[in-house]
Image (cartoon, rainbow, N blue to C red; front, side, top):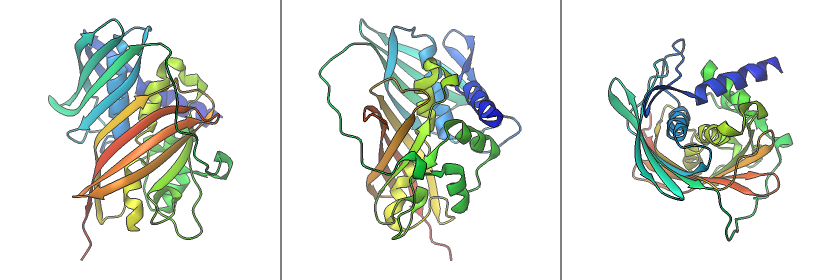
Length: 290
């Protein structure tokens, strides 16, 4: 439990940004671990910066982000917020994430006052439950993926688990080869607090989504033959993400080509409510060795 508490504390610190000046924020960085910054971290911190000046009466309902350059995990990111619009119901913010004075990510997000309306949603997919799932860190290790210690610690904070392998053959995250879909389970720890629930879900949404596009090709995302990177990421929040409950993250890929792969995601709670929807496109170049 101490390890979990420490992981949740690290995640909480990562999801919060420091205000430097009006509409200018700085995200936490780990100088002991240089390397490429995880895309979900930049998205989550940019969303935190955009949310900081909104107030409690509105919540983020959508965001659209473009990755421009790789971020350095050992150095902090500066987030500049542009207040594009404040209306009676909606508010819009743009955020530019900067390192060395250069943009590494552009994000636009929209906030809405809470209201009720006509409602429907796609039902919960019929998949195996979290009890039969494999800890994601363990599965990635089986696939030969070296998970940096800080990322591994943050994975532990979500208790993220991947759907079990199909006996007919497996692809990344345990999905059947040839079928461009996979699923995982995760929890948002109650210690995060409701104010960080959407930010934490934005962070977690980058785990595994783009790799769904590699499944029909019987390759591994972490193979040296694949040059992969996130290009853009979009999220639509439909409900408040519940804390301390299992959430199903269902992912599929309807298309790949031209050196890119397109993927979609849907997050459900165990009662079947659709909590959020995601879409992502990534660079997916195949470069056979030899």
